[in-house]
Length: 465
Image (cartoon, rainbow, N blue to C red; front, side, top):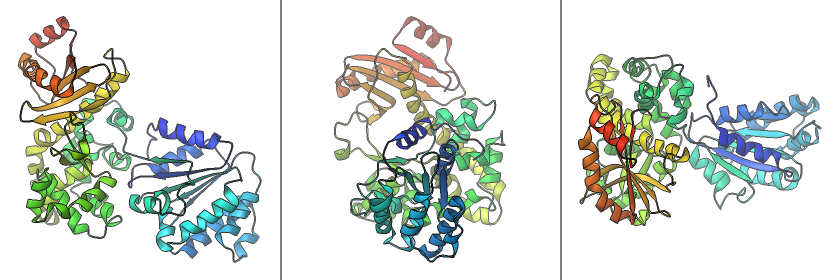
């Protein structure tokens, strides 16, 4: 990664595990290219007595040989290279080597060894129980295949279940840290870039040298030589066996089929047959089920809508996948012209709404209101239509309603009045007493709305992210 992005919470969690008096076993996992190895590398900078091992997709025996060679080099024990040993013996050699500080052992892409030999988690369980747990070491198991990492380390059926002292599921970086990849660029300028790359550091790196979003898309997504051209295939083929079924499902959602019934109809399948596929995609942080924030029992809500939660996957299926035949014939200019028609208003504007909802948590933490809400989401329903932001302070009975306008024209009083007309119905739905308002607009606000906000402390305006 060109520049390590702020992962303060994750680094703090690793440092706490390191500072523990006893041995610690930490699981670090998350989707490909999200920055797991970069996080661990940053952590290891301050801890020289560490051994980092990257497993391969080769056999368990080959991985054992590679690990043995690294331990031999780390400990200076040349005899280890010529010996026929098992995992326990290699770890004994490693633990027996004296260091000035606590040893850290990292097994990156851990799931590949377990994939080669399903019994390997049991082998490591024995190593942990008989050797490592009382040795005062820190063992980090890291992996990018979410389903395998769960089954091998976190599930109840795993031999390692109950032995971990901590786990970190690394997610994409939030938009609030996106600028750390770019020099001298504002959040507003970078929003179209974020709409394509999302918070995946590896994707962001490919866009860092560009100022024009369409040039960046043409060079890095539509170009068949770019790794992003077929990234969704590589991302899914490691995790699922029926890649065609998952592609069809994601495509159906990208086309605007967000209700379960609509997705099933589009695919010509029964709704019950989609559940397992949607769960897998949700576990991979690619798809999520969204319900109105006012729902008391979200899991039972009949108003649930599915959305693609990964920006790059959403962009790729909306703007790239339908035009693959043209791209294979190298008609990139035509595809780019089609993207330009709907990119801003039909795509970036929706990403903007999500970023604004994310911003609400930041504003609340910064004391923008004299209360803190516990729920932030949106609402849609027959009574009031859609409201972009509904933030609820359940304990205090406070409600904040908001609208997000990704536009080139300043927004005026009509936006505020429309929001105020919805307030009574939403106040009843949320069982709150006090209502305040916030308006986001990329083009700012008219003089009339600005003056109204100055007079009314219950109205806040935000023209910058």
